[in-house]
Length: 278
Image 1 (cartoon, rainbow, N blue to C red):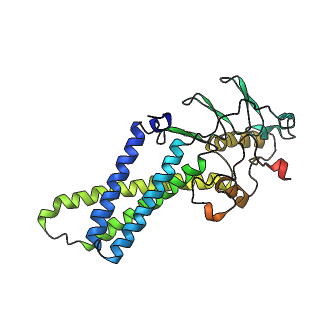
Image 2: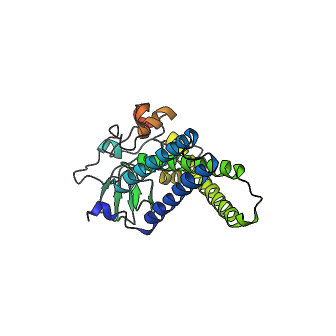
Image 3: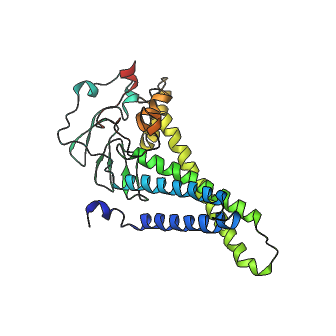
């Protein structure tokens, strides 16, 4: 077995796959089938839409798991110009080249050392145990899309469950176990939709501000220091909402939902910033 495939051999990943299998079976073969029937055009269409969402989720999930988030090239040499302090010392938090104490090497802007992977990761957002990988420069788009498709699929499944529940006749006493099943599934799907929806909203916020999770928390401290000295702080890589979006999803809107369409990404050692765009 290759090293890449071994990434799938983790309990969290197997849990995701098992949960996905259960949700798919329940949605298609119970909720949709009980509501309109799979043999009808409406049932076939709903099953096709949900199956497409599941396939897109699985594709994005696999790309996020298998793609190396990005390592610092061994030939990386910091640009002297980028190491010069800016006029606002407080804005150097993650925009300047620094040296990693653990790797004993220079790391580019936005690069951070991951304690789990035990190496520096380009444009690191966080280490995600659910994909058994870091979320970084090369797989952030795939991670964002898996959250997007997961949220959409969860909401869709919840709608199918509710539609099927209202359509059924619950007057018979022997259907108590089925009622319990529906209630448990409903609670699980609502919780899943809220969890994934919150995560999606968080990363939409990060994308439109061109921030990573790490940079968001660094920015809180930088803003506090700026206020103490009577200055204002703005994230140095925030170059405008539309530009920020295209830097992650790509300049072509037709490829925004394709996790492998990352040809727009550079080498991950330098990024457009306020200083360069001004």
